[in-house]
Image 1 (cartoon, rainbow, N blue to C red):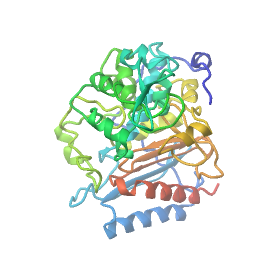
Image 2 (tube, rainbow, N blue to C red; image 1 turned 60 degrees about the vertical axis):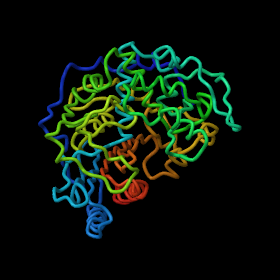
Image 3 (cartoon, rainbow, N blue to C red; image 1 turned 120 degrees about the horizontal axis):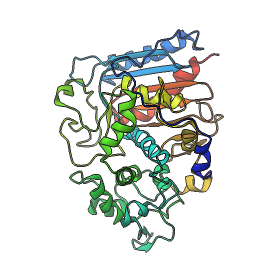
Length: 411
């Protein structure tokens, strides 16, 4: 596990962030010639045919796929309509609930605070949220014991904190304890919510197991404490504002409601109305965005922290985020880990072995429960986005997208 001091890495980084803002009215989609970018157009067309067929059969209402390389877009197309029974077509301006694709963006906000000297990823969470000093760990017999290791900020960013999502194993005793303890409340502010979570038992000692869960939601409260502002303000000041991401927010104005893609299936209440704010600004899954908007974020990542002259992170900071925080033991001990040949850094899954994964080694990515996903493949200089609102099909399209893209990448 790589836990080298961040200060040393940042000393080697680029100049401080530029005081510029990308033009929100200029499209982030710069088209290139697919063949010149190394893709076989006929093989990319297989994706088009398959998605059109899925729309025609009623399997999906709509989707959006974008594939690019060397900073140019080789393929981008919307399919179908914005939801069951709707007539508005899916376009690059359709707003999707991106759920857990919120996590990488908030993790980037956290790292801007590291660069500002306001946050330390190796510090205990209790430095920023005192209630995280005395934590307890769930035991097999239903009792709890005091944690022997402190929860660090980087544990939150890498999902090795011991915090869980109850919905992953909803009938387990610990999940029931979390539900009874208030895990699913949205009537609290981020700071208040973090206090509720602090009272719940950890599934494992911090730093010992990878468990997907509420870690990034707690990170949101840490970011607020370190940054001295609410999360929505920090997200806008640090990332979405400078990048010109005008359609990315925790809650949207009513005037944009007609642009939302609506869901197919999913848990009750999952596709709630993002034009009606709640006190909770979920750092783990609360943002909505468009393909055009989120592509700005993806291209910033692909550009080593910079997009159209606007630097969000130093190159060394982003490199630190892409260091694997897991070991084989940590991966085996947890639940819902991304898969074989994978690791996890500070906010992103990582491809460690491209003999068992299609994207090149070093690829970093994440996805949302409704089926949205992105990845950046530095080895092949490829970037991909896929947008859909069909939770039951998320895993299926992840497999298909990788096959479509890498079968088509011929040189």
